[in-house]
Image (spheres, one colour):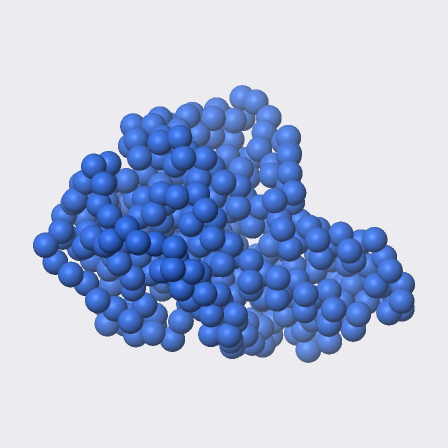
Length: 404
């Protein structure tokens, strides 16, 4: 997640007034202030976004407890309008993409250089992903497969799983030979489906940033408006079909997740002009109104606005949670194979037992991933940046590399 989900996931931000200075154990100075980045009102540190990401990852874990134990008919969700169903797990994914759009856009704004941007994204997403894919292919797969070890490792599907799920730009591979084939859902790590969307969103941000359109708030608003129009007529009113796919990206999911990502990008632009905390109440009101009026588009837009508005609030609790690290990405990419393994071992066959066993395991492994894989990779990227950068610093924006 971003997704994050940044995945799915992104860089946590704290914004201060131009005359103030902000220090934190995990902060670094921003790039020089440019004419295209106006100084705005003093904003709170966005520690609340870290808490929201953890909640979103937990929501995804809960939803998979139903899917992976065969209780799909009773999995939580609700209708918003006649044709639009919001599943509990997708709700967490939506939140990841909004936060990712907000933080990724700010990351580019802080350092608008393609190579530096790619380095930050690579060091955030791929180290943990590669470890998960490697352990899945080399440890979980051979143990759980009904094939012999020789058949398993010589299968083309094993190679395809490793290569496609390590890069994600051409989509993902759900299956390994003979692994979890008799389960209610045979996907080895279904959570990874959002990563291609996340990575292509990064590519889009970089492309728009390079040609200078990302700093144009009017263009971002126009792009969001176009996405809203297509969503309204294609999804809400069902005037046309959205069922084509390319590189693992389907039109329907790409439109939905892309629209939420753009909400985050737009709010990242607006944060220079207004304290985004003011969006918390209007966003919540929009969500409640959407549920009462059966308006799916209003629900998604309200969810995006409320996520950033609420996440802008910090406090001691949020800062205290943040000190332990950011387990959200690790929870997201690790929990699914953990749950599949628990089902295969016959120790978790109901949603409740699955959650009670898989959640603490996922959290523990996610924190281990953060401290031994993700955080060291981020620090490595920072050290490289300090070697490359000699452009000075400014006090209007501080980013913390704690992306999802």
